[in-house]
Amino acid sequence: MDSHHTKFSDWMKLQNQHIETVLGKFLQDSKVTPEYLHQAMRYAVLGGGKRIRAALIYATGLICNSSNPNYILGIKNSLDHAAAAIELIHAYSLVHDDLPCMDNAILRRGNPALHIKFGEAIALLTGDALQALAFEILAKISIKPDLTVKALKILASSIGSVGMVGGQAIDLQSVNQELSMEELKRMYSLKTGAVFSCCITLSSLILDINKTMQSSLDNYTKSIGLAFQIVDDILDTTTNESTLGKTSGKDALKNKPTYVSLLGIKQAKCMVQKLREEAHEALIPFGKSGFRLAEIADFIVFRKY
Image (cartoon, rainbow, N blue to C red; front, side, top):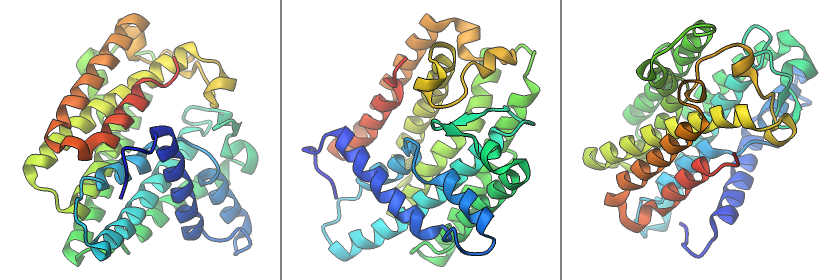
């Protein structure tokens, strides 16, 4: 399903192209009624983003070493459904995060935020529609019915009040507040880590990975999820909008607690490197089959700051 001979940057490009095609097929054509909503949905999802979450799903899929082409094809189809669902959830969360009542961001992926281009009401409905479509796609995954139900529960839990949305709620309540390191870590584990964990857990479900291996993957996910958010904190402080592709400096402007505000940039960077090491250690049981997951950890950590 993959080769060490393909450079990571080329592999990521291939995954991006692939998931873009998959998403394009799942999204309604912009000419289908209501046209304006479907145009907004496609605008929110297609043509941008690093697709780290989809890459996590496909990289976990490489742990499967079966040589049966039909088995591999079935896994690939299921991974496509899981990856599309996660990317739609991510897109919906960004649309809602950018709204004036939340982060009030005007840029996303180098383009006007969706509510700037389509209006706040359509932005709200777009997020709602993308979330619904994500569950519809995941419900059609090619695995046993009982596992499909489990997959839907995993996704629902990861984005609900004890997952992504809960983390965002804590984030909003933290404006002008002081949080301890543990409280901030908890917020990030919900806000970002829960969806990263969902990517790995859905892949593990599809691959039927045993509990011991799943535990190692859980440790990997915790490390990269926190590292991703800390790097975001650093970039929000040090990078301009044109380079970042989205509104920068929002956290400082709203006086939100971050790892940078608690530790300073130097210590925050040290923590990111420590998390990278922990992520690599967690992948040791998988040997060579975990090499893409290790590269994703490096990609997350070494984003330009």
